[in-house]
Length: 192
Image 1 (tube, rainbow, N blue to C red):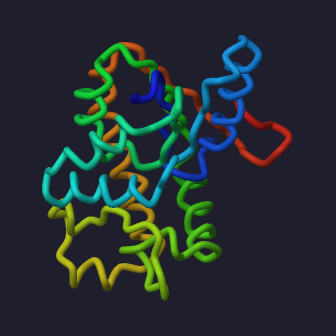
Image 2 (cartoon, rainbow, N blue to C red; image 1 turned 90 degrees about the vertical axis):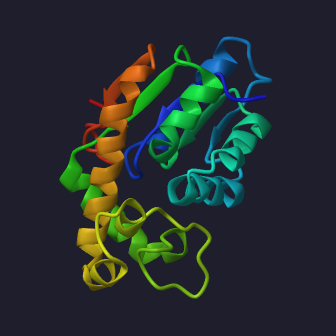
C-alpha cells in the first residue's frame, strides 16, 4: 500500500528530523501502528529512480511505492519521479517540502560526500556505491566528458539546483503541498 503523505527534501535539509517529528505526531494521535519511513529500502529506491530518469520506465518506481509499509515516506530523491508520485498517489496526497538555503545545502552535501561517498555514485569514485544518483548527462545538460571534468562542488550544485527545479516545476500539481523553510539546522535556531 503506498504512503498517505510525503516529506520531500534534497539532502541535509531536515528530512530525517521531519520524519522523526511525523512519527511522533502519528503516535501522539494514537496511530502507533502507522510508520514513517526515511528512504525505506533505498537499495530498491535509487535504482527505481534511475530507471525512470534514464529510460522513463516508471514501473520499478510504481512497484517500489506500492510495496512501502509506511504511512508517511520521506526521501531526498522523489523530485526526480514527481510524475509517477502524482500518478500513483493522486493530487490530494499531502506533501511537505523542506527548503534550506542553497549555499548551505551545497556546503553540507559536499561535506557529506567526503564522509559517505558510497551514497554518491555518479559524483565520486568509490569502491562500492550503494546509491547511483541522477547526473547532468542523464538530463542532457552535460556530456559524460564535461561531467567528469567538473569539480565535486559544481556537481553537487547541479544536483541541488536540479532538485529545486523539478520541485518548483512539479509540486503545483499537488493540491496539498506546503513548503517548510529550514534554517540553521544543527544550531540553537533550528527550524525557522
